Image 1 (tube, rainbow over the protein chains, first blue to last red):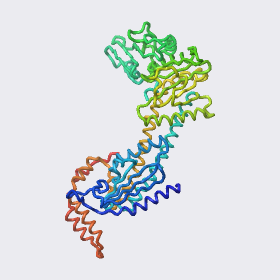
Image 2 (image 1 turned 180 degrees about the vertical axis):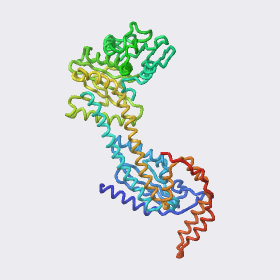
Image 3 (image 1 turned 45 degrees about the vertical axis):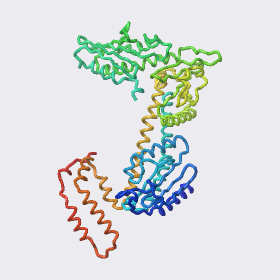
Image 4 (image 1 turned 60 degrees about the vertical axis):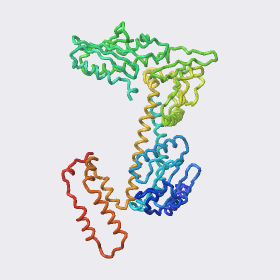
Length: 169
Length: 370
């Protein structure tokens, strides 16, 4: 794996390990309600400073933390138009099936391609280090998958073109 | 996929039914295909083995008349169907060709099947003959500036392509249009591969392909509506070797169905393939998040239970959610405390008290669907 990618992922992992200290905190404004404060942003005292980690101009990760929830937004590398549509289709496909991932947000934050929302309940149900592993592995897999898809599409196109031209020979 | 098939499956089915003698009454059936091709099939009860098949299709080019079949096509039809059918002149009113098929003259089942297959590709025969006539016989028409006048061909409605006949070669130019932006990008990458493959030494005998995002010079002067595309222009250069002998039919049919071929590849093959790959990757990613659960084994087993979704929902509904929640809260509290003594008896007591639910054997009797 490229050195820059490894450093980028290590930085994200360390930030998540520090940021993922969540506890149950009922809503201060509405009785008997328990909402992820990072989404509402009504009480500034419950929010921590957001951290933006950029690998380059095209790839970045925004980590917003609050007392009971953390939101991770990712912008994925898209070198050309084909990668752009493949990334868009794939991430939209996953977002539509967010219930099977539990921590995935159905709609990404504006300016990003995909977002995760982790609450204190997720931390109670799941191992913290495995959650972080999931996020990091997700980022690696997305990059790998988009590159593989692009290669497959081009290879498939070449095979179809060869078969088409063979009919004339 | 039906566009690539020279044989019309609907015609095959109807002719098979007629030749088997299943229909005992007068038969008069109208059939429409590809939005513009019309067939009329008639058979009478008194002579069920004789079938009259009439057809009308729009001409490929405005140079051909729409009322009657061009001579070249008529000659080709007579030659191809010499053994299996007879051309009726004049044709039925409103149609450009009528064929009379006598199944009694074909006693063997194998001959009948072969005849039905040949007759069902009538559409392909007529179009191919018109296209061959244009590629072989039409003289190049030069405009004042030395360029040749393109001939517009409309095979499928609203998607014309152009043939430019020159002395040494014939260039076929396809303006490509797609409804979806994704299709445009996928098609553009396909066209780039097509151009690369056509320039390889291994394919020097194949027609040379070029792709351009802007209209080529040969189409200068054509109406603006034909030159507005989002997929660019694909040009194929056909030489005499490609339309010689037995290759002519194949070449002509491939040229006629090129646009459908591209759209089929983009829409069904590539997009379907992408969808399958995404699904596989989604499954592998969900396994990772499932393994992150603290009580990971139970949930994995739950997901592995096969069977009907409705039965699974009923089973979950039958266990009281309240009892399950209480049990979860208690066990979580217990995990936070450090006990030296074993507390199995405590858990066992709770389990006995709260979780005694009657088993409903009937609900469990279901067959796992493969």
